[in-house]
Image (tube, one colour):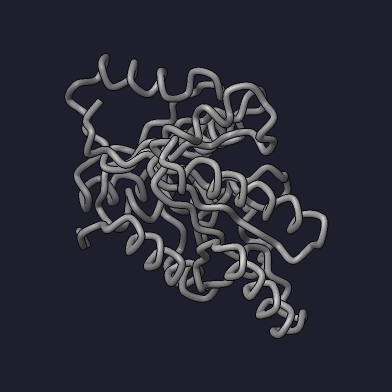
Length: 258
């Protein structure tokens, strides 16, 4: 596998924090809008929600002339196909990526995103995480979820990154599913705890939005969650995901390809 390929994941040991949706949005922005070559390894066995979404997307396109035209215009603009989704599991996620690249030597990936189960106790999750370059951990302001997330991040940071026992270079936490009715000082207090623990965090807060869970429509309209087309630019700007992507690209030291 090309060593210049960055391996990243948006992962947490708590479910319900939007890791798979964020993975799809990040891949969509990087591959379709910022002109990087991406792939997703769907290791979230057994549900494989991203792989299943790709199947739904393909079925929708097959039944919609509007979507067929949208895909054709996208191909004319970026001159490449949709990013591949490699169905796998936590134990063999990295191995399956390497196998795919051996079988498709014509494809080079700048960034590969891994979608993993939401429990670090699942066999293979930790061994895959240590092989990554960067890890982004979504948080939400729920005490139980936050305590679990901070424990997860602190263990990885203190025992693996700081000691140099893993390939993993850095991890960053970020706020997701933020309810804007909550008090801003609450997040400031939490971020002071992150600083005390020596945990790096991104500055952008992504709010709760029902559109994050909307699949593409055969009749057209804005794209939100889709593996074949990028998310709607206006939506990305409104919810702050464009700012989050700017931060992520800076962490990954990605050149501008737009």
